[in-house]
Length: 227
Ligand code: DX5
Ligand code: ZN
Image (cartoon, rainbow, N blue to C red; front, top):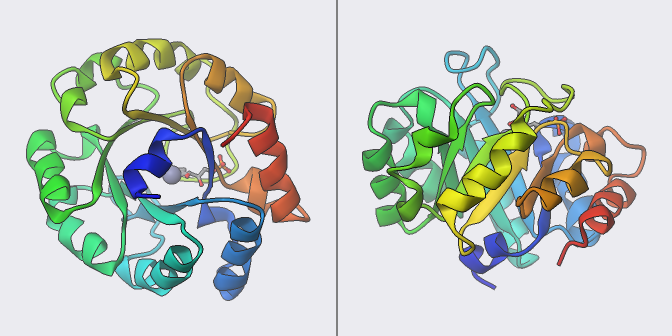
């Protein structure tokens, strides 16, 4: 299945941000074995958000493992001026690249760079950014990410008002493209997001903070009737 087809399904995307990086491959195997086909990779630069996480080297270290399992790497850039780094992440093996609308004055240009590189295009907005910020770009994306926490950390509580934005985002986006939520997603919040129009559910601490990440993945997947 192509990355574009994977993104169109109802899927839970484990975020490796909350994984044990000392045994990253093993942790990724646990969720792949449980059925995950979208692995979410959070890139933070210490500027757009306070933390620094990982770069293309880690993406390339996971690319083969994901590909062998028929899965994709969904790279979420929480970095300023993403247009400067898109090529490196795609060369490292990113199948989709999502950048923040707040992080560059050149959203359409950045989207075209992702598109031309052959990866799927995603644009993200923070809880405080209005849905209208997406109006002129929605036609050119494969995925919109409506953050359901303020980006920068795993394990934060779900921001309730972000739920209200989902039907409005879905209306701008149409039924073909993916609507992703990220932050505070668990078996209680995921079905509410599904009801509001989301089809991709990123979960970090609810999966990798659990004793058995495979079981935790399956619980969220079951809560939304994942493909
Ligand atoms: C937050 C990241 C998320 C993070 C979510 O800035 O974009 O992907 O891993 O973590 P949880 O699921 O713990 O809220
Ligand atoms: Zn993320």
